[in-house]
Length: 192
Image 1 (cartoon, rainbow, N blue to C red):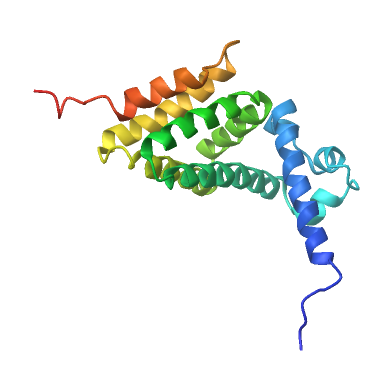
Image 2 (cartoon, rainbow, N blue to C red; image 1 turned 90 degrees about the vertical axis):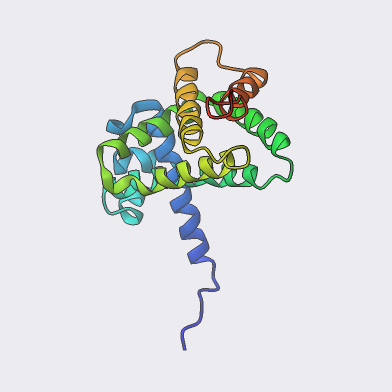
């Protein structure tokens, strides 16, 4: 009879993996993808030098786990916003979320480093697809126009990227205006 581990080893192992993934994101934010090594990540996580190699056989496995973690967390936040009963309240909540995201530029930079890695490596694209699907799900609360939905995803990604390049990223009011312009302004199909 196989009984589940009751001594906490499985839980401790999952916690260590989570710490290594978070450490990978910090290393990417600080040094870029090229700065990721098993030793560097283990040290950043405060774990033994061999810990990252124990849990993640290759650097690709480690980078994939970091990308998946970032994109899945972002997608889950977006899905929760899509489930807000009042679409207008959801739009305001998304603007607030975007302000929090740009307030942590190191983490955002790491996400974009990993996002660009997926652009170069098709096998890493599934987590980014889940993010884009969550953005579309949010957008469908306001429109079913496929062009607007694509513009929404591009706008969010573009404004976040621009926020990394400026000293004054958009505030909540500006985010709301951007989102309203994309989602709520009548398009050519409704103007007569």
